Length: 284
Image (cartoon, rainbow, N blue to C red; front, side, top):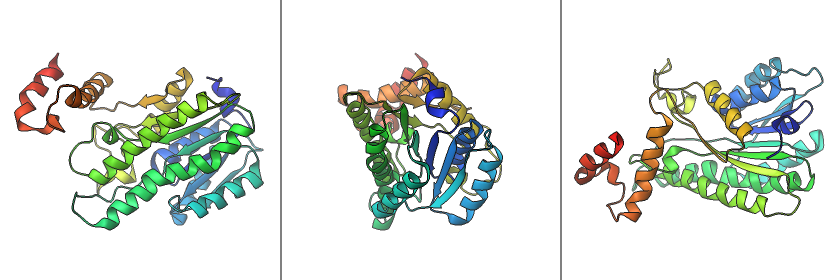
């Protein structure tokens, strides 16, 4: 893993999707504070302009540029145009953070539109970004990274929002395959990382709340943890929050994998026959 300064230094280029708010905005501010040129990408053009001003004010480099480009990441042609614009204005990209996501809610036999929207943004948006920016990031030969935002819901797949779970499970599988590809590409200086946030208070999770719940982290806390993990070279950036520590996350993840190994019912953590066993397991 290259030294972070060689990737996040002054004059380097970062592209962040879902940058108008939440984790994406917090990441863009941090990259700007390091003196990077930052490209903010979001589908919400109104909020994007305000976000650009906030990020530009954080810049630690008077020569750095901060631009915003309204883009629907679910549209492959739009992402192609984005990559061409960024390449033309800035040249080599050193950080690609595929962070854009939506969560309109879903049910197994509910509206098809919700499933399509979630898949197109949360999964295909990450695939489009990676496949269209990735080859040039590899070709320029400088240290670089691709950060894809996943979710714990894509690992333990709790009941309640199956479309979101399936899309984020796809992000995990895709990013694992990406890192395998990168590390087996001769001369490649690009690494992939899977960001797995905990409970973060963002517009996506607010659901009408106007104040941050005590159990939630701020986007800034999440990005700070991400930076600490990147400095260690972590691929899986498993974030805690104020309610759930890493030990609990690890047990939940291991239990979910154990459903297959132990031949338990699927999603046994929420199955009445397994409730006592799971509760006892958490105490071990």
